[in-house]
Amino acid sequence: MTSQSGFGRNERWFLFLLGFIYMFNFIDRTIIAVVGESIRRDLQLSDLELGMLGGLAFSLFYAVLGIPLARLAERFNRVRLIAAVTILWSVMTALCGAAGSYVQLLLCRMGVGVGEAGFTPALVSMISDRFDVGRRALVFSLIALGVPLGGAIAAIAGSAIAQSFGWRWTMVAVGAPGLVLAVILYLTIPEPPRVDAGDNANTPPFRHVLRRLGRSPSFLHLTCGSGFVGLVGFGTNLFLIPLLVRRFDLPLSKAGLIFALSFSLATMVGQTSGGHLASRLIRRDIRWGGWAPAITVGLALPFYLLALCQSDWRLLVGLLFVATALLYAFTPAVMTVTQTLVEPRMRASAAALHAFGQTVAGLGIGSVALGYLSDRLAAYNYIGDYAVQCLGSGAALRSADCLAASAVGLQHSMLLSGSVLAIAVVNYLCAAKHLPRETAAGAKSSDLSQL
Image (cartoon, rainbow, N blue to C red; front, top):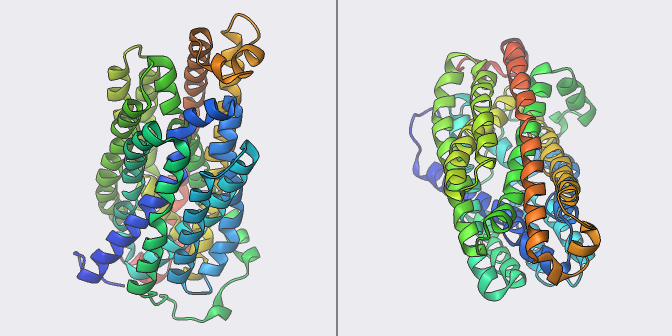
């Protein structure tokens, strides 16, 4: 690890390349949200089916397989593991474009989830070994800028490609670059030495990790809080472009640009400012690892609800920008704080378990629940049989009455989901209460001296 305040040349390359891979990680994850409305009309899907495609199919394998892949990251070369999973998710994304049915597309999305499951735990583990505890939140925040950048590129370039060449070629175009990045990573980034300098025999059994974290109120509350934030964030990510197309009758390319401004750019602003601020606050008092996200998520809630109530898309963009920047300001910091609760050989597993809770709640339960509520509320606001008249044929999906009902249903379901942010605030405040004691018990003395 380095204790210097700046970043050396090798560290800058580490930040740049891993951030670039993270960017395509998120592009391949979120591209389904960009082309989702096109897929829905092409394959005649309901919002529930779209929610399963964009969320459950991905998150089920992402969350479950993240744990065994994290165990591999604690025993074997993490650079090789990241290169391998990058190849896997890139290939499966490209294969989505060749899917001939909803079931085949669902299976390909499951494959994307399998590949991406191995990335974050191995990345967080490497960061913990390469950088001191005072800089981890900043480092992860900088690398995590790949998320909003990926969202912006997926929204702008993906929507433009989809509008010109169709959603299938879009899948191929966004999947291919990951193959090149995996090779570059393997050739240029060395495996960092583990701070415990132990061998594989020192890796605790998984039951010990579960016992440690299961008895950690801080970890449980941080994970629950992130899960509820993920429910709102992932739901917005998946359904914002369909909402803009249905409610404001915007072309896909313009909706993609709005998505990039109101969601991706806002996430970038929030994470950048939050990462720098978190690094300073956590050094002063570890409780800021819970206080800071509680404050910003609490402030995000009214802006989010107000944004969805706007009848002018310009006002929606402005308010949603503020809400998203606040919502994501400290999410990278929360992930790094969980690393101080466990021993070095438990860090990848802790990251995977945290991601498990966040992904299952956000992408899994959240996206399916949002889709289900959207369909039910659309049917409630439609005069007639919505399922038969609006989902029975591709032409009917584009009728004015069907689009109006589906827009209202989606808007109201997103409003209902936003209320869970209040529960996230409570969880973060509870975590802050327990962090000082648990950090002292779980972190190494070399880490604690820098807090």
